Image (cartoon, rainbow, N blue to C red; front, side, top):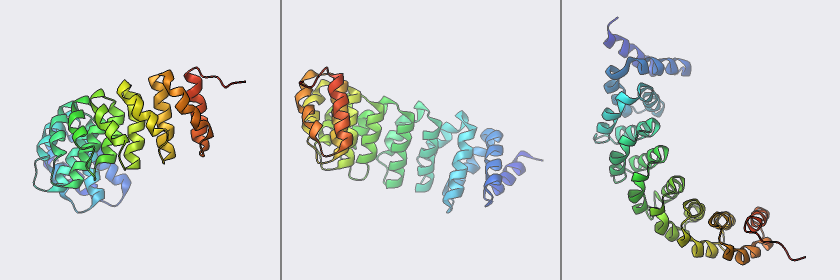
Length: 251
């Protein structure tokens, strides 16, 4: 059977409602290599999300040879193609994809931008940090961006995360409070102390844990106040933090 016929058969199977047959087709297309890539990328335009996801999985199984075609697909006119290309590049975790994915953070379509953030999270390359920092105040992306910056843990994000910790979005504050401890920059000390009185219990807990990571004994007295916190998990965390900082209760 000619290779092109085999590819078309597998593409047809990829559209089948049977999940087992879809998986078989994805695996088979992955084994076909370079020759199957263009047709799979065409399927990123399919109206059916399941088909689009199956095509992405097949492309990912092809591996390294798919990276350049996927980078090119980030420039396609159809937003679903750009979105799925970004998703596939994230699954491939290639640092070569970071610059084009950073560019995709400014895509006109929100779905593409979100997929690019997710992909950069999967890759985890610090090269993306400056562009992510610029998006931390983006109303649509800031929660995801804060999570990614927390995961990467690069000191260049410190100032932006401090701003996020002082902001109105509680999800961003949660991620920022945790990220500042992971980064370990002493500039985060005072903002983290202030966050111990945040209205959100997880922000308070994360801030306390981050102060423990900074290891600054000046945090002891502010954290002692959390021993009376209304939330049990915050109280328990405060006990552990105080122990790590060398505090002992008065007998």
